[in-house]
Each structure stands twice: as structure tokens, then as C-alpha cells.
Length: 330
Image 1: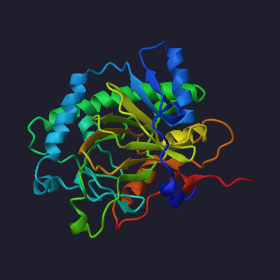
Image 2: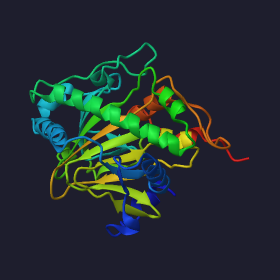
Image 3: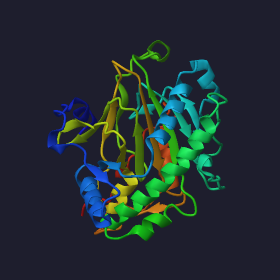
Image 4: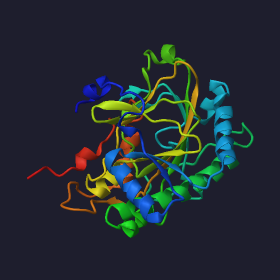
């Protein structure tokens, strides 16, 4: 399907096809593994409850993010990210070379006590703002919490694609390169005059580059996933985290699981906060299919991540896709 066809696809009635599955992690392990495998195969999206994280912990993170984005734009731009240091604030990000209607603050691996090494494609550390006062400790704590939960989910997914839990875990060793993002979706497009255009979506359609994304939502809807020719709303389930698989899981599973196309609508009634945690392998990791006749050549995560990040900026390149590593059919 072409990019234009995706843009024009209709929105399905709410709850059609049963909606994105909700999985209770406190249930029997075999049941959780089977339900997760089915959700990854059918949707690439699922929601988790029974995860052991209190509502108070989640609200503290959301409230801190909201307080940061309430600061004046000039104050936030003091933490402006760059191509060499991709951590910090940005308000003109591109997806598929189209400007998104959002602001972001990206928190790098240093928040999880993960040090950069000589071979890393990115340098620099997170430029922590001085306000709001609890910002850095709150986000450091959430980074570590989300990392642990994603490691658990990765093991469950590994069991579902043939028991390759060890292979997947090794790709995140000796250190993973995950990052935490704070998203703010404003009412209207406050940058339209400055940018010289109007952003029509909060985030344009895309798949996530890494392995897993764990998303905290504030209760305001807007996230949609593409399936069977339509866009489907992803409901905001109280107490649940939204999970989607990324391009690296698609390669590992050899297309048994497909990284889903998803997007975020522009806000027309209420501002919105969402907080995704992108669980990513070691930069040195070589990602290759683990099941069946390989459909992809081995892919170096560091190279892929560098090139995908370049596509976020208008002057640095187009957004790389895993199709560049696909093996042509005989």
C-alpha cells in the first residue's frame, strides 16, 4: 500500500474487530505468552494491566511532563536537541518528511545509568531542565521502571517466536540504548506562522524503529493503528499501558509479527500528554531473522538508529525503513 493510500484510509467504527487486546500480566504465564503472541501477530499492539505499577507513579510522571510543557517556549528551547546530541526539547520534528503537530522532550540512555561507548552513533547527555524542580529524579526513576517492564515483555515475546529469549536478551547486552520521550500535543498549530506550513496530524503514520514501545497515555484519545484497510482508535484503558512492537521485532520474527503503522491525530478539543518508552538494543547488536528462511539481511542497530534519527530533521536525510534490508524473492 502506498503512503497516499494510508493517508486516505477510513477510520473504523470504535471497537470494531474487538479492539486492541488487553492482557493481564498477573494471569497464568502460559496464557500470557499465548495472548501476547496472538496480539503481536494480529495487531502489533496490545494493552497490559496487572503490571504492578501504581496509579500514583503514573500520575506523577504525567504531571511532571505537563508542568514542563507549560513553560514558555523560549525556556524549553534552551534544552534544544541537535543532530549530534539527540536528547532534549524539539518542536519541529518530522515523520515521513512531514512536520508533526507536537513538542517532545527526549531523555537519553544516561537516565538509566547507561554510559555511551566509543562506537555509539550519538554523543551527549540529557540536558536536564532546572524547572519543574522534580523533573530529573522523576524521569530517571520512570526510565528504570519502564526498562524492567520492557525486559519482561521481551522475554514473553521471545517465547512466542520459538523460545528465542536468550538471543533477544543478548541483543540488549551489555547495555541497551533505550530512550524516554515526553510528547505534548497542543491545541491548534502554534508554529504554523514560524514554520510556514500547517501540520495536519499530531504524528504522521509510521512504525517504530526499535523493539518495543511502552506508552503511558493521559486519558485523552488520539492514537490510531492501521489494520485491514482502516485506522482503528486505540482506547485509553484506565490503569493500562499501551504496547506496540517495532521494526526489530519484525526482523527477528521474520515477518511473523509486523511492526504496525500508527499515527496520532491533531488535537482540536483538548491538549494531550503521552509518554512512550522506546526499548532499543545495544548499538552493536546485529539483528537477524530467528525463524524460517530469512527474509532480511543482518541489520546493525546502530546504523539503523542513526539513519532513522536523521530523517527527523529536514536537512539530514529521509527516514530509513527495514525494507532496505529485505532479501528479494527468488
